Length: 71
Image (cartoon, rainbow, N blue to C red; front, side, top):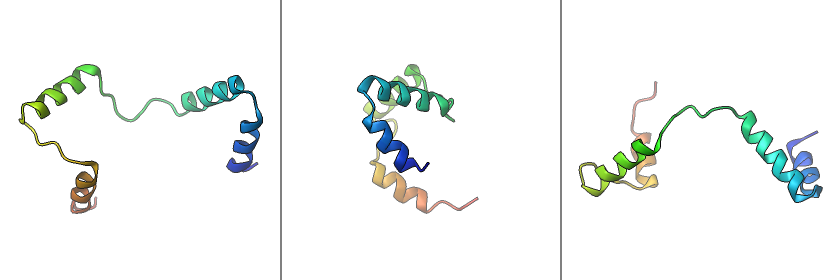
């Protein structure tokens, strides 16, 4: 069965079943490869607001990453 066939079949199911399926699929991905807690986020927001660090757009981040040497 292809992913597209699974999607089509899942969309035929009642909302509650689809929600349960989504939940199980997300849990099956495991823990993320990063761990950022609320304290870390608050620190980064304070640094940005105080202009201690420069805030850049996502597009600028991607452009800068293109210039880094490949490993």
